[in-house]
Length: 102
Image 1 (cartoon, helix red, strand yellow):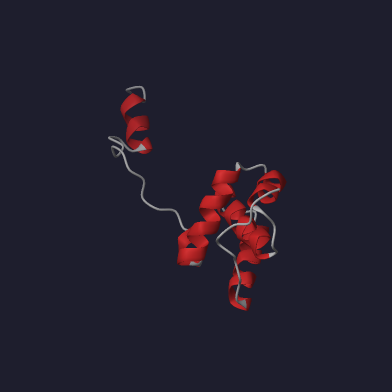
Image 2 (image 1 turned 60 degrees about the horizontal axis):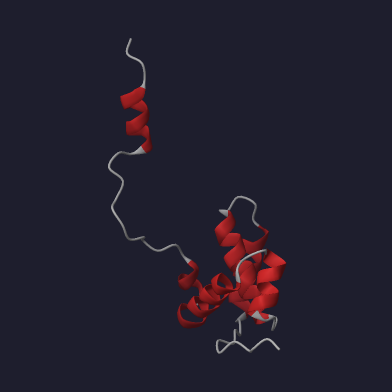
């Protein structure tokens, strides 16, 4: 039997409208659409396992976004800076560096 998440999601009308709009936008990055759908399914009472199966996303990823939304609401779904070494060259700088000389 799937266990119940300790992070129940209850949405305000404004949050639901925002997430529904995000989930339908084809111009947004795919990851933002999936995050919105995860939260909407969670608000509908689905388990992390079922949400993961519907969206073809691993259960731990569903759990991560449910928890972040529970704690931080809509701002928690935004992309955060990643660790690691910053890129040395920008993509445009690489292109110019490797272009043939005239």
